[in-house]
Length: 624
Image (cartoon, rainbow, N blue to C red):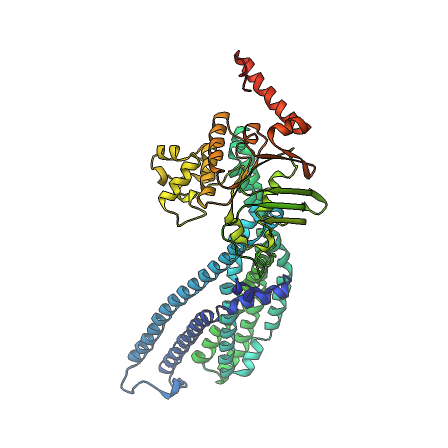
């Protein structure tokens, strides 16, 4: 990541963006110079072809017209006097063919070198963006949309890459080509050159005006791309809802509308480009009129050769106009790169809020004692979630946390993992402020199972070993056994090598949760955090997960967030969170007597269960 800072610096104004993009290009100056050198050789070979063609015209003129001026052979090297005119013409044609073959090979090599450079830059940018995304805190993801992030790492990164081959290399190539053409024309006839190129400053002014005109449109195009990707992602993720409400046609139209908006904007950009290019072409054609008029007069006077003079000059002027016409494409590429670079650099410039301190304490395996002292936190300053939480958790203790929706249960686990840092107060692990502990060591000491467990599109074994890729199959199976997952894994077609579908689509909710529990247990964490792991499963699956949880908690500090009494009553102590603070704490029996909220929760679940049994005609067990 040091290279990223050296590349990009800071700032997103147009001038700063250009400087940062140029700084990025300097990292690849050797490759750029190689490509530019190849293009320069191609220009030289092109001039050679023109010179040989013009020489051939002048030679034929001297042969056909008696007394005509003899051609000026380059470097004083003329064909032997014994050669016939046909032999001389075939000799010139052979040289032109040889130059053409060399040019074709050089063009191929230049294309390969340019493509390799382009891909190298693209991979570097995407890798840097992706690496930065891995380090950013949840504050960034809370504020942004996944569609925008995807677009920046994919589409915008590609546009920034285009600055190398679409701007830097092209500017150098066009600049060198124009310089060579100008020098060559000046050696032929200074006054004719100046007269033919008098309109060139108008092209530069036009390019500057065009740049200002299209820049806002490119920024809007990037934002519209975000909307289009968001529409696609949401539709794919919510396909069950779409089909369940028979909204396929409407969603397809919504996606079409998003694309049509991009199309309309791009058409307006292309319209401006298509208007600007012919205008520039018209200006350059005026130069050709000057050449025909004044240059023709010079030929008649004998001050300029027909082939090596007027013909070559006309072709040079045409190529000069084509190179000047590239200014439109360069300006277009600059604006596209600037619009995308601003969005890419916003990611690269985003501060990393959660990181290890420079003098962070390295931690082996903690004992597992946790202390929360006057902890305060809010996702936004004006909306606190936790206002004053004080809690001591002893080593190896099993703690249950319950409370109304929005009381901060999941937030508390996120603070323990340092997904966020507290706004006030302190969280200590074994007496140390967790902000002073190395972040990797802290998170390796804690294993977490989320309410909605995410699984990767990989094998069962790879998903379990995600936190410890070097784990042996024996270790993986042991973790799966503790998590009560070994049985159903062995029943799968390929056992532990069975592929898990995207997001675990080929597994039940209970199976996904048990795999997630096995994944957390494989690292043998000193502290286990379980976030409402039984919230959305049926009673039988809940029983399976609860049995796995009870097996997993042995020998480690465990914190379980749940509103299910069947889970909470197994805890050593239960913490009730209300209004951002600890409302009550005690055992299951104690809270039934002393806490109104907990007693109400118990009565509600007892009543619901009793109603279900009464519908079946069965009686309640005395144990309930």
